[in-house]
Image (cartoon, rainbow, N blue to C red; front, side, top):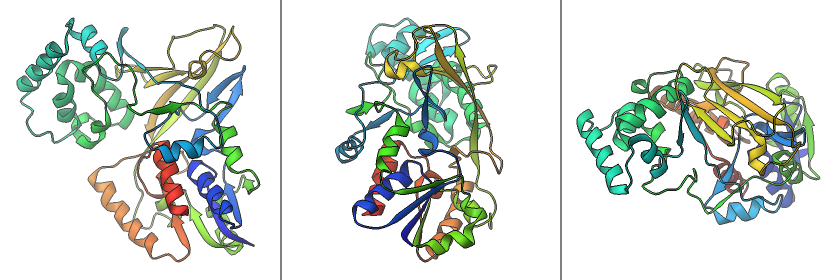
Length: 363
């Protein structure tokens, strides 16, 4: 009945389906959830666009990707500038001159650089072998102890000494007074929300929700010549070689009777005595739109992933990478089956990377 059965109505699945439909192929998209858009799903609460599965800020340097998503949504000019809260002390993120001035009372980039170099030398870090050493080599011990150590332990459920250095290499550090978290020319939130954007991508394409592919696999595979699977690659193969490891999240969202709760879209709580990693205040993504007397906030609690839970972050250490290679080799032997997205390829991807990969795979 269809050329492609696309399992997952998230960003990858929606882009792939849109591209193949535009090429003239017949696509069916299914999702086990009762809504489209996957983890970028958003909905209105008190007139405020709420990101149900954590905040998503679209940012990219890829002009082709930017032009593509703008076919389906106009974007506002939101720039993410989160705040770090360490036991009531507030610091600007990403680490920049505003952070260094508050932390050390210095005034110039040269003073900041000297302070970092002195602390790195005192710590004796030469060739970083883990996240702790990599973080200290970037920003020194003070910032590591206050703004990285506790937050990272909560996020990953492991000591920084047990985590690979590669995790922290994505962290921007600037010797300028610049609180823009992402160093990309194109940034913003889609006007009308992500769900509306994905809905436009899927316009004219058949979508069936509330369908678990793995539970109805025998019947569903008969519907199409080719399958595109965006779920967990290890689950597809019934965990034949064992479970890949992920981190999951629990969200607590509430509506508060106040116009402005914290004055920032994101506030990170970096002390590990606080059980959540951050509080998101959704109305600040759209510059205060919505009910002027209310606001919606979400607390994020990282937790150990177990089967049946949502898998948000692949744990990219050597053990899991080796295990994934076994599943990848298995996947490559499957005819008329393609794996896509962060769960299907077991890697963390920003939204622009997801769009670019789906476009390339469809091509």
